[in-house]
Length: 256
Image (tube, rainbow, N blue to C red; front, side, top):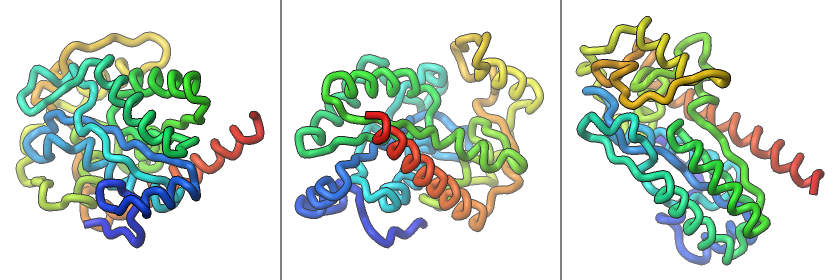
C-alpha cells in the first residue's frame, strides 16, 4: 500500500494543519472518480481508489489541501449492470460547487480537480467555469486516466478494467484486486473499435450501455499488472501531474 511521507488529506489531519496548508499554497485538490462495475476482478470503487492513489501524492507534491469528495460520479453508461451508482449531472455539479465554496471562504484561490472517470468531465468543466466566474478563483483540471494512457502507450491501452485501471488500485488497495477472476474479457477488437469511436473528438456516438462496447462489462489485457509496475505507474502519473499543473498555474499567473 502507498505510504505518504506527509499527509495533506483533510479527513486525516487536524484543523490547524489544514489551515496551514491553505495559508501556504491557497490550493485545494478535489479527487473525482465513480462507483461502477469493473468486471469480476476489480472493485466497484476502482475509479475512486485509482484517483486517491494519485491525488495523495499530488497533494504532497503541490502542497495542496486534498479534499474528500463523492465516491460516486456521473456514469449512466454503466447503470444497467449491478454494482453501479450514478448521479445526475446537476447533482454532481452542485456537489462540486458547494465543496469548492466551502474552502474558498477559508482562503482557497486555486482549485485542481484530478479526475479518473471520463463521464464526470462535462460536469467538472461546467462547475469549474461557474466557480471562476462567481468567485474569481483559478481552476485547473487533470485527467489522470489520460495521462496514464499517454505515459504507457507502448505497454497498455486505456480500457475498462484493463491494466491501466488495475495498476493504481493494486498500488493503493492490493487486497481488492482479484486478477485470477478475470476469466471473461469481452472480445478485444470489437470493443476497441467501439471505444475508439465514442472517444473521437470529431464525430462520436453517445452510447447508452457499456455492453455496446464490452458485453461482459470489461475488456483489456492484464499481462503487465504486477506490484512493481503498480507503484511505478502511481509515481509517474503523479509526478507528471505535479509538473504539468505547476506549469499551467505559472502560465495563468502571467496572464492575469
